[in-house]
Length: 178
Image (cartoon, rainbow, N blue to C red; front, side):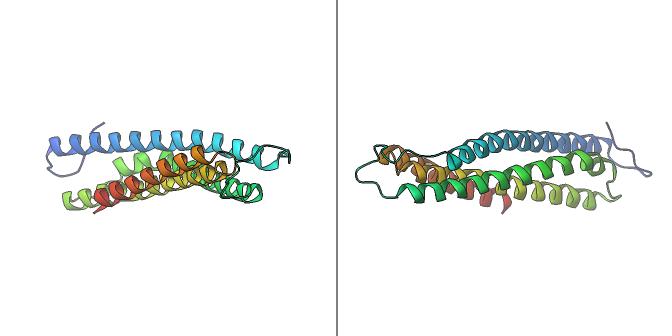
């Protein structure tokens, strides 16, 4: 769908802009859908584990770093992080659904303003996506800390992987935004 303007403008620029906005919009729609799915599953699993009774005779790691009560606190923090990601992703998906045509059709008249609109849209979408990934990776990190109360090796491996992905996220996000 090409955008028409009341004065002479490069048709190629307009079509290219429309294609770029469509790709960015589709990309972020998919990120929001994936975040909603992962957060829903993570929140339901952590909530179920938080409220269920844990057998006190359960064989816990001999050299555990964290007590089982602390593990429940970590799971509660993970649940809050998953629920936050779920709420933000749902809200962002709704905003995107209602405003994606506005980004394409309500374009300012000057090409400089057109580029500024696209840059602002991409920046806002990148910030929201970064926050969502940060929330989910932090939730996985706290879930891994809870696992250390029962299995040291598996828990610390999960913490290490989550930490690596968090660092990678910061590096990529800073590189993209700056």
